Image (cartoon, rainbow, N blue to C red):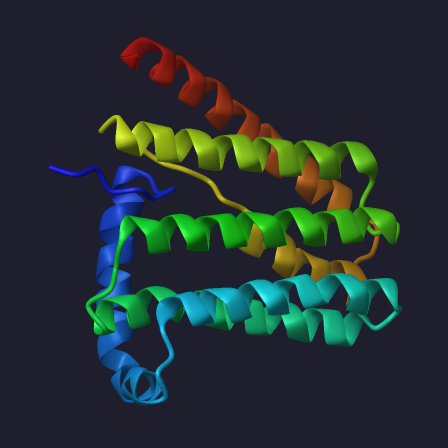
Length: 200
């Protein structure tokens, strides 16, 4: 049996399957319309990637509201590509891998933009990006080895949401969020490495 290529833990995979079925049923009229227009899941993944990357110039040019709008569009589209793939009967390892890599590019680019504009410091931001990438990579390897993580913490939505708090309500606290996220990710990176090493 072919292994499923995802970055999810065992429990999350079951939740994601349920969630995508639920979203597929709830959003069926929208998914039907997307299909009629010839849109595929990869098209939504690309649009999600581009909107997420749009955060960077918007923030660098001093328009945080536009930057947040780009992030919101990224999150919405990121939640539609999987259900559309299932709706069209085109769900695949290739699509899952593409979606995961697009998400990781957005995580990296948005964090670097936050560092560059002084909203985050280099160390917590850099470690967050590094350990996030390591954990995602290890999760895929572990799933391919049929030894998925029992649980995972992917804090990108927490960081995205906290950026709103950073901008408008409680500035100067994003570094603390990134340090906490990096610490948890570091632990998962270490346990992931040990599990993979034992299975090889």
